[in-house]
Length: 111
Length: 114
Image 1: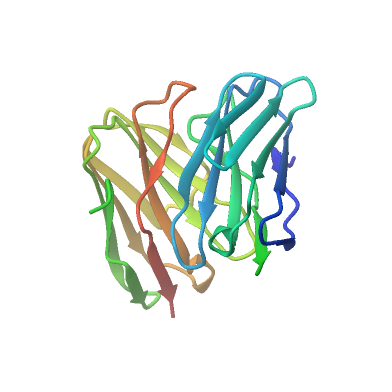
Image 2: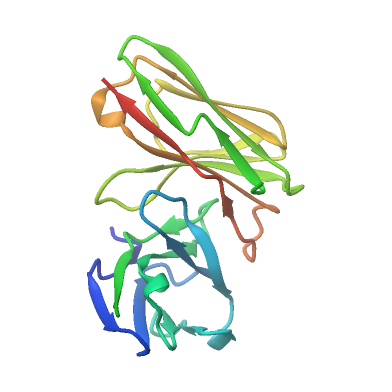
């Protein structure tokens, strides 16, 4: 059973545009949702967390959560080449300790 | 210096060797984790420790043996590994296991089994 699903990409977005990354999860009891950014050869870096339905904004990043649809997304405004990375969606599933990760979406920002 | 430090950064070992990975966190967290990251696969949770007690073992083979002497240190002892165990091993820590907790990762150990 795939608990956290992401499109692996690559997702190619022109510089300055909005990049939209999507994630679905299977466990309705999930309460906490996280987005990590991972550059090639590096470890994951936490960039956003969201716990309640709606939008949460932090600088150029906006996380969106819809628990009814079991869907969480990350929007990156004014995309920069430095945003090129793999973005990992992580969910804290109710019945398990630790985070469950998706495979990640490879994002490429084209100059 | 990052809040979570792993050593060594790279490790090459033979299938008959015994080695250990070390993780130390300076964030005052109570929970620590080992994850495995292989190519084309999602991060796989291996072990979870909360206040030094193991709370989860995700069906990990016994050739991987964790140790958590205190809330700041976590080890992963390796013996008689297989080539398919080659991967990036990541340590993470969080304040606790409550749902609204954020996990922070170390730099990882790139392990190659030959």
